[in-house]
Length: 364
Ligand code: TTP
Ligand code: MG
Image (cartoon, rainbow, N blue to C red):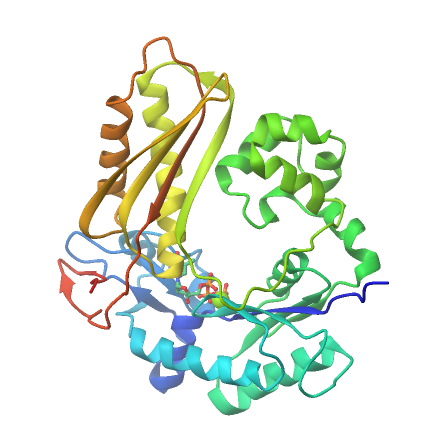
């Protein structure tokens, strides 16, 4: 019999904002917004302290809007060097327990502690110790999710934030998934969640009623994944050496698109999702790729490369729309559109180059 895996997902609480509050005690207890300033053309919120979140402020929101919601909020520019330093120290704490660590961004990682360097049998105990070490040594708090698969561990870490520790026992996973609202499914963006709701799918239990073929027909490859995950099947390994090669989003439509206007509208929505993801992982890509799947399942991709990293929504939207118009759209019915960025290169530490109140990431 295969032993039940023990997976921990750790995610730091209000990461950038917490580092700022730690390093500048005058910010403690105050609504802090890390990101671009609201003046001028205006930047966006990278993250906000929990005090600021009470006003409805969220990541990726325009800073101008955040200021309207909370006029007393204090805006601070990101200090990536400090976040990288904290991220490195968190990793050193993880390494006391296991080398099977898969970082997803500066502030989150999966750990496989089925076998661990301290021979501790309880993954909950390890999660407790890691949280304590982060608090004592770094003066920061983290939330942890513990389960037997990556998907549920990741959802669990978000359930009792901040400073949470949530364990979902393997025998409870299926029931947990049945009750889970679709928008909480990791990887299901707002667009897909809305589409699911339009089909009467609100929770895992509704997804479970669909056949695998139906799910694939409506959601493409992801459909197969949903079919498995809702049944608690998640054997994906913790991959310590995974590198992000491309990042994007795509959507399969409930009705095929036949006009350029409709396609452009969908591209606007998909681009928004892509940009939010890029921001979260601090990435800019030199290559933008448009994927089109026609109603007969024939698929094409078109791409365009730049000599610098791209992460802004305008360039992405303009590029994919140009790529789209250059394809032959005559009598074509489109069932899926996707946008991805790749060719990330190394992000230089020169991150404080500020133009028009917005922070720019610079590539080597
Ligand atoms: P998150 O873990 O998503 O957010 P968080 O740590 O600030 O808050 P939470 O307690 O809910 O986990 O992202 C980690 C960091 O990544 C965040 O502190 C700032 C950055 N980030 C962006 O720059 N842009 C984004 O859109 C998001 C979501 C995050
Ligand atoms: Mg976090």
